[in-house]
View 1 (cartoon, rainbow, N blue to C red):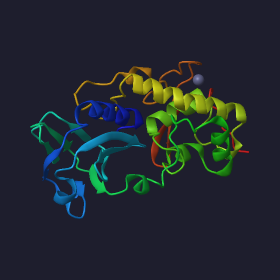
View 2: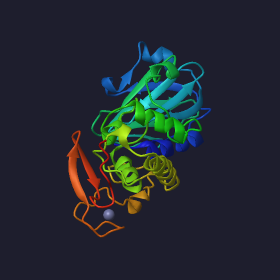
View 3: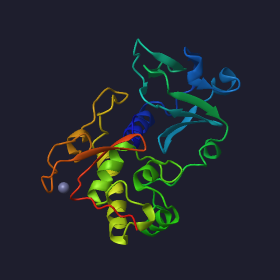
View 4: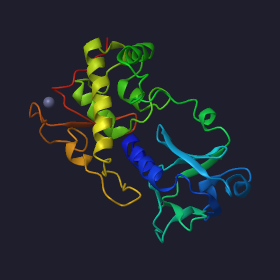
Length: 266
Ligand SMILES: [Zn+2]
């Protein structure tokens, strides 16, 4: 599943390629991949005014309304004809096209007249200016939940997937089964810094490619090399040499160092 940095990378790529294009034709090869009441009428002849990201959603903003895309497991948006597994195609007046390619077909493109309303249930953006330490501390205190699944909950905070949560909790010295309201202020501060740094570094590195992802232009990301705990079960911790442990937590593979990360429960 692509995480926030990968989606951000896709969005930046699209900003450079499809903004200003006018849609001349819509081709839906896989019915479930496109949702709108009258797809053709709401999309055709509209011009793409902006491409933005909210959480892991891609918002392709039109003259009115927007196409909201979630890539899910294997979805890709590419201007290059991929030959196989194309679920939706937008053709433009310029002669160019945008292909939604999706081998597992879980990805969705939805037309909505009001994208902000559609996505209003989502938590704050970790890289947004409003996400300050004091707010994060209050958010964690207000919930009495196990911290890892809480950080994965998009209604709490958006954009963090399994890989980044494991990495951030390692950098903050917090064991993933800790309870959110018991984490000391110092570790909350470290977690806040870790989340923002990891996401920013990852965006700068053009996204990780661990989980079957490549950008629209098919250049692979390079962040994978920087992972400190994710996927390193049994390998020595980079700080203390103790073997990295892997457990299942809320059905997700969870990696941590039993020595460097403390379990806060009260
Ligand atoms: Zn360690």
